[in-house]
Length: 64
Image (cartoon, rainbow, N blue to C red):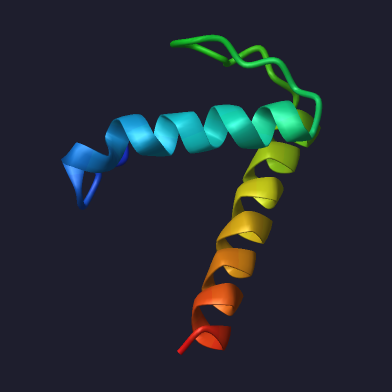
């Protein structure tokens, strides 16, 4: 099942964010299909993305 973006214009920025997170955890992503990743690799990327999103939210709350 493909997920539908709530903000389609953000697709490229989200893809860059995913690539950056993958690089930070040492996982090589390629453009397009990455179905050959292990669950551990995919989870590491998702976990890094969540970590960065939480850090960003915390910083925004501090700066209010």
